[in-house]
Length: 202
Ligand SMILES: N[C@@H](CCC(=O)N[C@@H](CS)C(=O)NCC(=O)O)C(=O)O
Image (cartoon, rainbow, N blue to C red):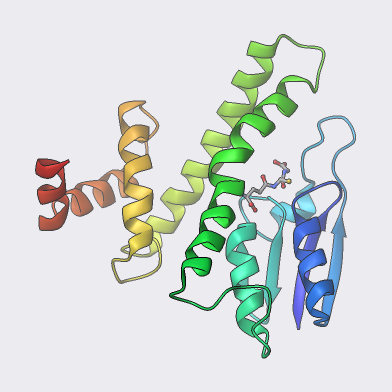
């Protein structure tokens, strides 16, 4: 059975809603934000190093990122509801909005929320938030790439194409300076013939 790690007032509400729509069984584990900082508690970090909601577990399998979790749950549904048939235009329109929610819309909204949260200057708040998130994300990336060759495992995948663009930007901002595995990974993927051709053409 799927266990949903839920944080109050968070994106994990999406996952509970989805499971209720599909009437699939699940177990709910509740985590409470620190009332002062509004950050997730240690109990969520004990589950996953990113300490971000939602996180689900299904047996030994642990998954973060609400979009990935939604796809996982939809794949469990024998009636294949709430997702247009693969390969249709409707399916790609669905994908477009799925990615838009986190990839485009969340950045300006979360930034606005962070800047309104405490009695510090907007710049201080934003700097603090960015430093914390950068450290968290690049530690997680470094840890992942210290254990496997590529993001999705031992095989190169399109996830690497998505991640590499961001890692290139991160490298130029100095975020990879103390991340040897991530640096080595970046060099490796950037040596791929197709990457080189794309660099020529693009
Ligand atoms: N892109 C991620 C974002 C996850 C995320 O930022 N979750 C927030 C709650 S809405 C969180 O756990 N914040 C607590 C913290 O940063 O300590 C997703 O879609 O799952």
